[in-house]
Length: 191
Image 1 (cartoon, rainbow, N blue to C red):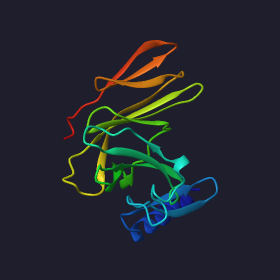
Image 2 (image 1 turned 45 degrees about the horizontal axis):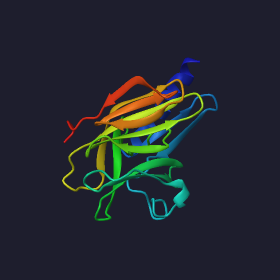
Image 3 (image 1 turned 90 degrees about the vertical axis):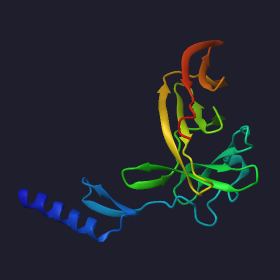
C-alpha cells in the first residue's frame, strides 16, 4: 500500500512539473484518474461572448451613473454564467477574479439580478424557493485595461426566499412585506 502512495505522489509531481502555470490537475482518487484540465481564458473565445448567446440567457443590470451595464451570460467554453461590463461607449470589458490557480473569469453564484450599489460596487443576487444567494463585488482600478479585476467583498446565502433591493448604496433583503434586517453596505474602497 505504501508503494502505491509513493507512485501516486510521484506521478502527480511528474504531471505537475510538465504542465504550464495556466493549467491545473484534477485527481479522481476513486476511479484512479488524473486529468489535466486547462483553465478557461478570461476573455472568451469567438462564439462564447454575450453577443453570441441567446438574449433570453443574458441578465443585464440597469446602468450606473457612468452609463456602464453589467451583463451575466452563459459562456459556451466553461458552461457557466460569467459577468462582464459594457461601457456606455459600447466597449466590452470582461471581469475576472484571482484564486489559487491564478486569474479566472468572474463566475457569480446563482444570479437572477445584477444590481449596482455604487459606480464601482455591484451585487449578483438570486432567490429560489428555499434559499436566496448574494455576492457583492468591488471593481479594482484598471485604467481602462481589459479585463478588469472584481474583488469579492462579501457573499452568502439566506435560508428563505427574499426580494433584493438597493437602498442608499446598501443591498437589502425583504421578505413577507417586511425588511428582514439583512443589509450589506457597498463600498468605493476598491478605487
